[in-house]
Length: 384
Image (cartoon, rainbow, N blue to C red; front, side, top):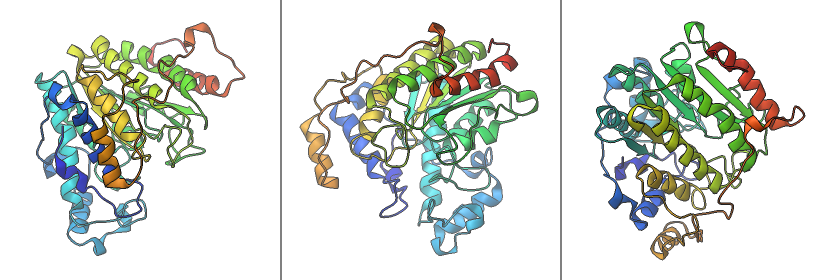
């Protein structure tokens, strides 16, 4: 899913959410010819009726008003704040990005495609009635809500952004049709301060929210160990009809806004795992993959999401491959920065120790995984 106009999602100079990361990602996808291996399509912006599947009407009105007159933005709605400055056209481009995620979900549900990617999406912090954390409309939640509207009875949402997927969890916290799983840096040390293991869903949806709060400094082996200790078993039990995943690249050790130490190679390993899990557990391999955070906008984000698009398009890129000079020239022309030379951080293939091999009760990573398994697995009829 791509429309050049998504790069107008621009909070202004100096804001970490620099839209150049989107343009450079699409440029790298083209440089590798991935766009020739897939169908590149654009969807229309979502309309008010779709936005209201997740967002309150008064909030949509507030976004539209701030979009027309940024000086009138109402901070009560999270607009006009340092995280979410108002800008002209904000409603239109936010609705366009949401349209790409909803369009991806519709295409996968209809069977037009087995997999669909919107790397401009994954804006998972937006709440029903407010902007938050660089996110105006929650395209991830809108994609899931649209799948439910189309008749899906089980949708799994797996979020590996460094920040908790709080907005998506909040929308579906009481809906047993949606399993939300978030692996993120511990809320003690990172925004938004939520995503504790004991946040497990409400009422009849108890056990449908899953949170793995990772210690700051977690690296490749621990991150992959945590993912594989939780996600596959839950998906095997839930058997989603569609798998929706969010691949924020801000887990990377170079990211300036967080404190995990994950490499590009481990990010790629999780993308490969999500692809395999979709084929194994989702009907017909139905997989919708979204972007998310990521603020190392030259070195990390374009490489990570180009791998994601290539994996979804069954056109995987060798991590050791040299990046085309044409893209490296584009990077310098746009940013005056030197571009990376290869599609790896030099850690491929990445290994980890499987949870079934036993755990160390004194290890902070293992404590985090165990807290999640104890909080959620019994309520789903699984062993803790």
